[in-house]
Amino acid sequence: MRQKMIRLAALAAAAVLTLCLLSGCASSGVKNTLSRFEAACQNLDMEEMLACVDPTVSGPILSAMELLGIEDTSDTLDRLVAALGLFGDAGQRTEELLQSIRITPRSYDFNSAKDSCTVDADFSWDGSEAQPVTIRMVLKEDVWYISGLSL
Image (cartoon, rainbow, N blue to C red; front, side):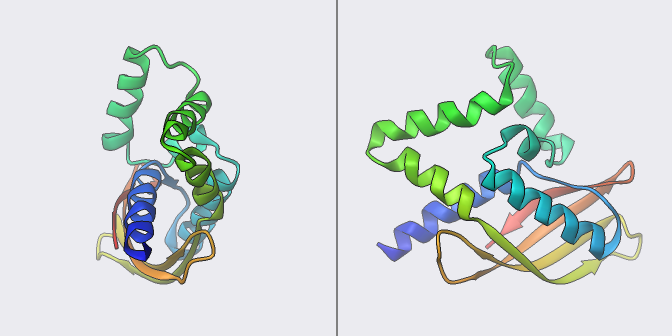
């Protein structure tokens, strides 16, 4: 059961974190943006989450949503939660999971050009024990974006 919860949380975290922009510069800007991401999760704010993704990832997602006629991205998360609700309490659990996400950065490793950064952090959800994660970020046009996540 614990393994299943960890896998579900990892999948949700990867999906959500892929939807997050890190703005600012240096470690203080990165930490502030991680706080911004947490707030977006707690508020179930899909638009803010999408605003946090590397445009190479978020661009195609937004294009697909436009193609499917989804104009209000905030409605997308509601639809996802409702669809997951068809499988018992999965929709409610997804909502609770997103609202409970906590990220605590431990270290920042910038490359020599200062245009990418690896953040080692502790990640927890729904009262779980903190799990180590590595968040890869890239700087584009003076804006930090999450470009990947490793558990």
